[in-house]
Image 1 (cartoon, rainbow, N blue to C red):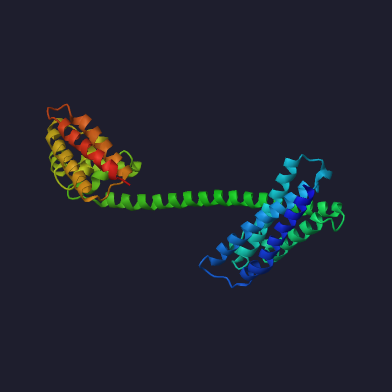
Image 2 (image 1 turned 180 degrees about the vertical axis):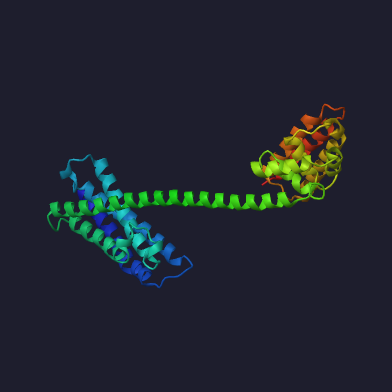
Length: 332
């Protein structure tokens, strides 16, 4: 079996050398491009190199090359494969980032730029060939591979750590940007709500009375809406026009004196909601799952709130639920 391992190991090394000295050098010699071609070229070359090196060093392990360490064989195989993986990854990063602006290159990779892409695979080839064929004392080669493998594993751990740190920083930056966007949005909406006329701009105020709205915006919008002299009449009007969905939002989240007088207008608004959903289903447009569920929840809550005022809302809600079943099947 030692003889077979020797032959197999040399075959793997021969294939790795062929890859390194011909297509690999051609890819390294190409000018950087912005189409991703070089990146994929290195991927398709470095992956086979990693596998070939892994099998070559596995042949070394099979022939007892690491037995002097006293490790179990599974630990020896794990070490050589892990070392090959991280060293080939160092070579890959050196090649891929060599033409990038230095500020875009991970700190761990910067010392390796350029040279490691050439040296690391050649070092792996040389050490494996000398070790496998017992050309020089095995102790020297074990030491060389241990140092290189240890550095490779340390590099892999450092690169992984830097990646996690970068991910955390990126997430913190996204949160900060989102918060800044929300703050700008709230300032803009608050200015619009403060400038709106309670009667002429009644419809534009209604969506901002939602329980999910910013507290300051909602408070300002509610004060203006409730300052309207004949609020029930204006609500009935908006429950029957293009603002029906916003009027339903207001009624869902807020109490209104004289709610019983609004029951028929609520039924009309729910019919408009059903008619709108029917049109979207028939035309297969704007069928987003989250929006469908949010609208359906609002229909149910308003119907439950106004269903006890002598107006039968169940038929309207049942029709809506039937349409909702079809809409869910088409939703994205």
